[in-house]
Every structure is written in C-alpha cells, then in structure tokens.
Image (cartoon, rainbow, N blue to C red; front, side, top):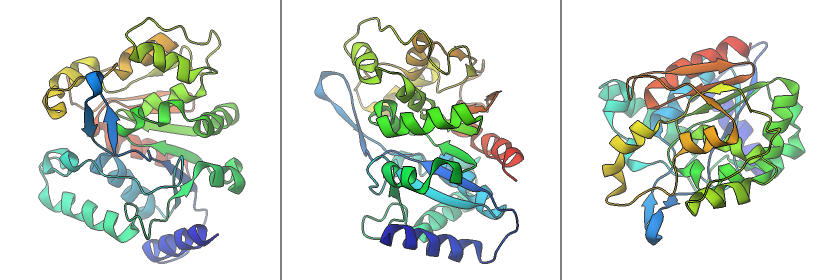
Length: 280
C-alpha cells in the first residue's frame, strides 16, 4: 500500500493536473543489473536510458498515468553505457533532460522507488491497464524471459487484444508465455537446439528484436564476454516471424495485431508514438 501511495503521489507531481480520458500504461522492467555470459563471465547492465525515458516522457506529456513494475518490485538499474547522447540523436540536452526526469520519478532509488511487483500488478487487476511497455537493455534476458508472473500478464493482454509493446532486447520477454520457458531457454543457453510450444500464442506474429548483426557489432560492450544466445535466434525458434531492418541501428518498428516491437534504441520514439495512437 505504501508503494502504491508513493507511485500515485509521484505521478500526480509529474502530471500536475487531471487529464480527462487518461490511459493507464504499465511499464515493466527487469530487477536485474547484470547478465550472465558464457564461461562464468558477467556483464553489468540494466535498462537503456532512452528506451525507458523517451516513451515515458511522451506518455506523461500526453496525460497518461504510469505504473512501473518489476518481477520482485525492486528498483531497476540503468545501463551506464546508455547514458550517451548518441542514443538521443547527438542531443546532449535531451539526454540530460531524460536523466533529470528519471531522477524526479525516483525509479532507480532503492529507498524511494515507486516500482511495484508483478504480483501487486495482478492484485490491482490487469484490466486496470490499457497497455504494457517493456524497454530493453540486456537485463530482460536475465529474468523477464522466464518470469511466470510476466507470462501470465502477457497472456491476459494477448487474450484481451490489449496493446503490448516491447523494445530492443525487451521482446525476449515474450518467451515468458511459453509453458516451459525455463527449459526452452536453458537448452539454448547450453548450446542445444530447443523445441518450443507448438501453440505458442505469438507463433507467426511478425516482430522485431535487436538483431544478430547488431549483437555482433555491440560485442565490444561485453569486454571479451559472449552472450549465451541471441534474442533473434530464440524468438525465431519459438515461432516468431522476425522482420528486422536491413540497416543496423536504424529505426525499425513492426506492428502485428496487438503487438508492437522496436528493433533497437533508435526505434524508441516510433514505438512510443504507436502506443499513443492506441491509448486515448
């Protein structure tokens, strides 16, 4: 209850006024601040600043109410490498404004975060929310891809035809809806061919995700480490129809039914605009 009151107060401060017909958007992030790599190596990560804050600013500017959640309700971490103006089109001022808004919302503050757990989201009621948005960064590949509570939420949104948007590495969270997501991703991590559900709810959906080519180009960030598997391969094996762009790190958004996916950090503003078309 205390966290929910904190969240309500925070949103009231940001919005500053009551907006008629405001939508309720759920933003789901990872609890994790690192990704386990091959050979026992670990990569410090979190969410990408622009992938969270550019959409969040757009949602707030449009007058919508936001709820931030992670599986356990812990304060998420920002990937420090993402605090770079190149992800904001070279605009240093825009980057600093995103940092300032992140600080104002206190999302990453262990003591003051308004973030709630996914079990709390279930208690609030999935029908309370008009859309769900999952930003990227590598962190979702550590926990969101196998989180049972997230799988339940996404299955509800799918059955209801509600807007479901995921960005960059975020689409890996769709695997949480597999009946055996832990076994499926475990096989991939072990370097073995994995077999997914024949009736996966997103089978045949056109979608995009951070591409294999972009992963190869971004390898220096891992400082000699290597990911256990790439999200493009995992989603393809699960039955997704991957539609990545031809040019790395250029905006690419794919819309199929209720599902909106963005390929990389450059796609964040397009995804936000598409969500806003659907949430009135």
